[in-house]
Length: 458
Ligand code: ASP
Ligand code: MG
Image (cartoon, rainbow, N blue to C red):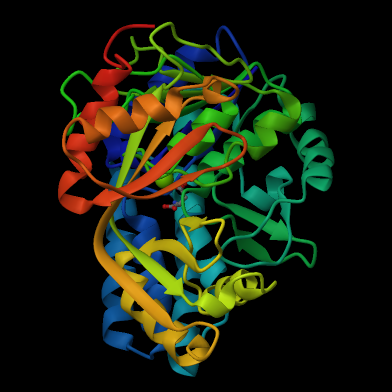
């Protein structure tokens, strides 16, 4: 048995649903499948905006968005010749909720999630009815109906694994013999019975949760990319598909890929050792990237991929008074945390007289202002901001215990005349991250890619 998730990038029109249904019709002749769907491309963004317009009481924009969402889905339904019963119910619900919010002029985190979750219900309703029309027994489930239980951190809810496993098994196993369940990705149900969402890109997490709970053979995540690559092909000409990668490496690499991935989508798979495969629905001859517990070490060296993130800045807090004073780093981090500024990378030298953090450039000025206002004084003397930076990461599990990898990475970069501004390596040694001037970022990627012959087949 497999779980297959179809991402928003491949759900654009009636013909996409048709192609998926046709594929599934053939597939289920040979193996059982649980299907997970995302919302149609762009719909989740529109639903999130819809909630915001409603909260501001902007009736004009609310009505405009509602009718464009309705038209888009009705068109697909009609082209596919479906009854659109579920679709109409969901659209009506969406309209009632958002019009209500518009009149009240106030929204809650729970309502935001309720609205955002509807995109997947619309999409799943279409696919499930289409399968039935083709003579396949199918039933639609919301995330909660399938058994996904979460805490109540709306917008980024955490699945409760034990409960989810029990409910998913009892809800889905009995029908799997003769029915193809189509499950809405992205949403779950809190213990109080409220709809929650798992965070952007959360349909991947839904698929992995179901796969791990049902102990399937593999979970396939279908989208429009072949899989994980050794580097961004726009930067490196001979960037190559990675055929096999371990969970830990994939988690590191997911931060850099072209495809938006949920930061914790692999967690449930690690617990049950469930293999995940990233595949391209428009290139089905390609077997994609297999993510499993297996760590393959390449002959050319232990680095497997190199990632680049532009638009970041280094913020450095300096002060001799920080030396040997416990709690200084904690204070800095908690102030940034309270203000919802995400820290991407941290480094402190042994002298403890300065701490540098990497943040997104969009947050950098605000972060500096907050730190200056809250911390400057006799202990923290100075805040420096280096605005134009890029982070690189050389990723590969084999770095652990292999001497000389860091030397090769930095030699390769410096031999191209590139200055390294900041370095961090976690003690797990799956990843060496460093910061360079933004203008040097792409050249540094090419330097590492060629040093470790990443363009050469495994
Ligand atoms: N539709 C949701 C999003 O756009 C979840 C997903 O597609 O994975 O974030
Ligand atoms: Mg998606």
